[in-house]
Length: 582
Image 1 (spheres, helix red, strand yellow):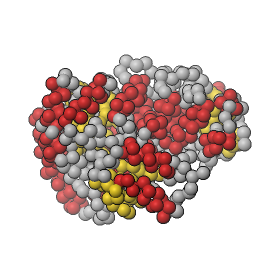
Image 2 (tube, rainbow, N blue to C red; image 1 turned 180 degrees about the horizontal axis):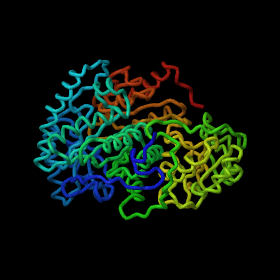
Image 3 (cartoon, rainbow, N blue to C red; image 1 turned 90 degrees about the vertical axis):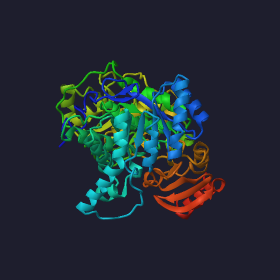
Image 4 (cartoon, rainbow, N blue to C red; image 1 turned 90 degrees about the horizontal axis):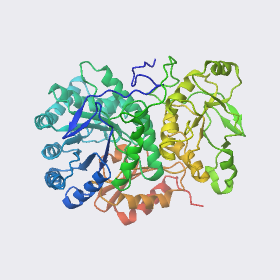
């Protein structure tokens, strides 16, 4: 049974999680500090001038934490020059070294930057996708190996006032964790806690956690489970700050929606002290949507009315299950538990669209003609009438002074489960957020909770864009596919080719393959693991060379980049997933 203390005090009102303070140089995170906005350089860490120029641009845009990759000790050593030139230029934004596979690079980086990000999945372990049963003593030996490798970095950071992020990635869990916990949120959380326990044994507490995945359902479940585990841990002071992000979100509107669903869902529950909107675009474009997502939740912002309802939530926050509404038909469309989530627009927008031109993106329902019953979910008389009413489409009434997330959760908890629910991108008639981000938070996060049988888009004034936005939200939430699905990482100093250019070519060649999922990855750090639920993968294997995968299994290695898109198409054809574009 769900307990109110599971991952937030209430699902029906906003309460910011109280976390301990962590310091990055002169910048504080957690505690009463603002939610900090982070980004990552795309320039090679060996190119001092390029890194300094890019970092100064990010700082001018308001970026509060800047991460750089440090893939070897020699790359890490050049952080000295980058940090020195940035400080000489008057830029004191804290720097973070991103470490994978190389403890020696972490030790070198800690001399020059304010924070070290380590990935618990590969700091000690090398991922081989091996199946193995560990005895209790063998498992303890593995943990001892972590203690030996990780302790020197912890002690150095403790002595020199450096911070750390224990950043678990769904795509790079160790074989030990995969064999013991599976490819799961539980495995992600335990992977990070193994390292946190070592840090605490050494009385080091200046660290934060993150749980990142390209799958928003996995990401949300992992963060919720992490906070629950931190609340339940024995001993004091486990309330470490949380960094939020959806990894490999991609580019354009799709990436912004996916980030809004994952990050926005956490922020709505009061979780999150720093965040990054990861885009397969220039890093500068990550800053504005980051501030936009955080703005409603910053200290001092007013929040809509709280609800003290004792209602039992309609969903398990750790396990996706769609709410089981009974079948109804509206305007010739079936709605209910096992039916697709439908897209609705205002009547005027529907009339203005050409169904032949819109094809699969034509809205399926008209708002004014839907017969939707709209109520305040705190109104006892309205709730009583729904008890005996025929199975209907129900929504929260416009103007209800609650946030959309909490209002629709309360509606789902308090009306009979047989009724279908219409989700809205706004309850107030206007939003401080852009249409894509508002739709991601106010609709997408609820879809991930299993709530919603139809969605209404009103904030986007352009009818064609509004219809496509509705379907894009459904796809980003993983509840309905209307087009090709892409998982693509943001570029960084590890990227072995121009990922933005490659992503554009791949989209142009494959964008008509509805229901096919393609991963476009810059390097192997998270590549094979994060691609495990993708159909096909396109991964940088060496400078100018691409390796192609099916799932996490390599098919062709080190293909010259100019041939790689054609070979990807051949691979899709060989697996019977190709259709010719119309």
